[in-house]
Image (cartoon, rainbow, N blue to C red; front, side, top):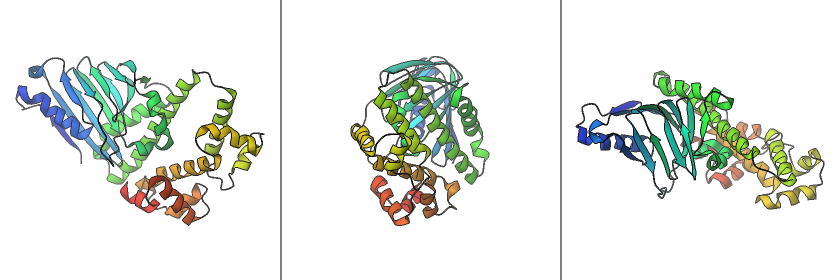
Length: 317
């Protein structure tokens, strides 16, 4: 359901709390602090859900949005929110980092951790909120890229920004099944942005020869996940090292190559199963498509990671 809440018609002394309640129910439990004072405050927030994604448009006079440390209720997946600054200039602080966010730039906020987003002028922004689990393995990179401004004119941002703004602006006019399919594409683009920015940050940090080899092995595994013949022995052979050397390399990775292959396959299956646009494809076909030869083994492995069967996962998304 798409709706809009604004301060028009609300007594001046009640506008801030009225708008704060609207933001809290749609985005996150934030505190709103107007810079111009309660009597001058104006704001609107509109939007709704598309599949697992929430798309919001927010306009207001200068203000601060802040979230302090708080426990996350069991079963709740606040996940991140991508903020696309359309008009105005903001500053953001999270995870010990701070950045200026001018119009045309984006910033990623982890809604489960403390942050502050300060809007210094009247502003318009779009927010894309998605559950953490929808990002799959890319979710592990989120803490490395929060509190930073990303340009919307280069790299993945040049693809993501116009797509996300068009979705936020026009999703209400689309059929439900179309929104869900596009939402899956939007999630993939956000995940790609997180991965890209994490790599850019990592490229500025020195790495050892061992770390470089481990990263190459991880990339090789991701590239060959769909091959049911992928095994530790084949991975070792592809990199010209012994099987024993491969196992030694991963002793410091808190996993084994076999577990990593299975984990990554399950994550990709979960990502595919969450898309209702793929509902016509059987669960066993999804498992086979990601290298699982046996449907029963796929189901057991999936449950060991997500605590539910693939069919329960699909039904819950």
